[in-house]
Image 1: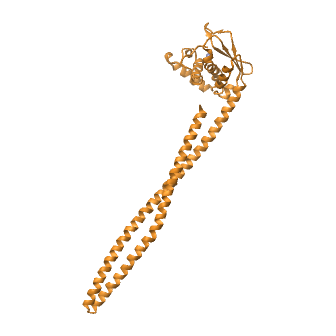
Image 2: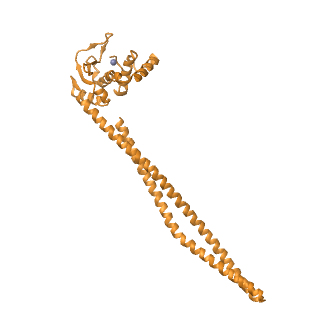
Image 3: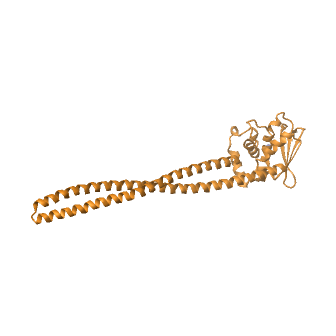
Length: 298
Ligand SMILES: [Zn+2]
């Protein structure tokens, strides 16, 4: 289950990375297009500016000539110069306007280019962050793969006897979902054809006993025609009896408090009401044994 989540995390991250890389490429392409545009516009603006400057100088000269002619008393010539001057002035003003329009177009291109480069830079930062996360997810995925291999190997080493071939393989599959700390304490699971009676005379489906050497021994009993279907649920419950003592004292205390605070109508099964450990096992069965709501006492 966790493997599948890690794998889907990986492919989601990979897809996100890919999309962002494409986005960055698109933005960068546009930024470089704008840069080329800017390089094309710059000499044009300079040429327009030179043209405007030229008319300004010409106008100034014509203006000075008109003043000089006026001072010389040649009103006719002064008038001619001043008319030429006015034409030059109009040309100069038109050229100035054209230059300032071209300059503001250039500034717009420049702003757009800077903005695109900034966005590309920001995307690069996000890409680096994504690459870091993808790296972490890959490491985690690899770690989980190794863990699940270890669990499968240990589950393979548990002795199973008295089960059919099909049950044996579904039991090993069920076992490989459990933490190694539990599996390492499980020595064997044995199927016994004769039923056993529980404390209150009810037939029981399984029982867990501690061997010398801190190894556990799980017995399964054939009293229930549906046992074949419920085998992994029963095993999940029985492994709860191995798991519970492995919890820290604080964790167990928390569980006991939770058990004490739970109303009788709210337990996962009737059997869970019996005591806090059975409650824990019944919950583990629901969580790991893929149980339907049918819970049976053990
Ligand atoms: Zn039990």
